[in-house]
Length: 247
Length: 382
Image (tube, one colour):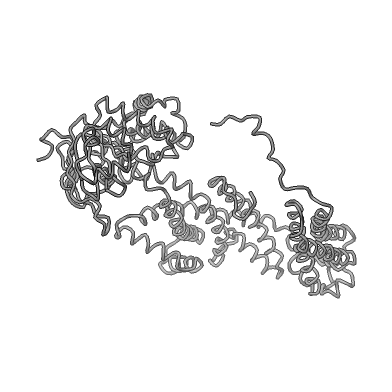
């Protein structure tokens, strides 16, 4: 039952209620290692909630999340340990404003993974080079542009050496001219074979980077397939309408 | 970071226009009226203080007893009375009233018809100063109609402060000991209570809420009395009054600090907790490394405000049975009052509290400005 189909992550019958609001209405989704799952859909369709159910930032009201053979929705699971294997990048960056860039990255390495401070710094600098910001290690988040902050947030998640990366509309808060630098980092990650789930409004990027795509509408997956095929030949009327509005 | 160019160093253009002779006259009149009543009154006082110290018939008429002036300070008090009742004081007051009235009438009457912003500002500034001058001069005129001889003998008699410096210094030290220990203990208790009070579990919140409401809902003077008389006299547990007072002040401050910390913790964006948790931190680790350090920075100004309040509240400790060496500022003043039956020490106590609290209040304002830089008061022109 768990990930014996070779999947790394598997969502099984996920429902989520916020009070009286039924946000997710039975979602099944699985992703194999090295693949990129993009999730698109109109706002309010539940795509961010679905992504946040993957690392249990939102606890599904019903259903199970399987990660690497374990049911992480089981109350006995050490969720903190699981989360070190699942990185997430938020729309609002959520860097720690009272720490400099380097400390933002090393704090969890040292306090959660018990990496020595020397090695933590090495790993942090390696990731900062990866996103092209090794010269800003001493800066505080408030001194960086939105695009730079988001790249630091990506480096912070990657330094944990996660096996799965989640991206939650990471370019939505950015000025248009800064979107490209962030997408370039994610594109490079995809090429390196990182397993990723990406919620995005950037349709061109979704088509280019996704192995698979799901279109969410009103709390369910309305259509799924390969991005190129879905863009070229949408099967459902809802996706056709959506694409005509955003493209 | 933006580089500073030569242009940035230039002053912004002056857009408020030119002043006029009239608008200048209003501002100057207002400033003169205030300056006259303040500086004039002080100069007259200095003149009389430097002159011969004798108890004049006028002072006797004003209620000062002429016998043994050296032992009652009556001669010094008489200088104050003489100065206030002198003819030059009267001239000063009426002159200030007149000039102030001109500034008010001219300023408020004409500011709407001024052609430039600068002139309008000058008219309003002059009128505002004029009102202040009228208020001060009017107050002194009213004050002079009372028995000022008796008043100053009771409240401004430097004679009764002679040789009291050591007592006040010790009182100030004791006040600050109580306040600092109370504040430090209160901050520790408050932070723990706040962390409990924001728990999602009602069973964890409940005891914290009960504690906070209990201490915020009863008067500090009652808490001090109950702890002191209940613990020492009731339970017969040996503890000094100051020790009990420090503990009660810390417990009480803890309840208020808890509410300050709670507001500070809840003001941190939800995303900070999510980011920390998503990196694998436990709830306590996320609190310790991500949330609390940010919250502490935000609550420094309100905590300093609480500290100012606590400094003043230490005066309530005087209701406990203190030994002379334990007297804080208020008890020191009270003791000196009952020794001499003269209230001047209370004025000295007030000044001593202000010496400590005014710089602290200034620090709070600086800290607040530092935290929300860029936001100047609404209603200003900047």
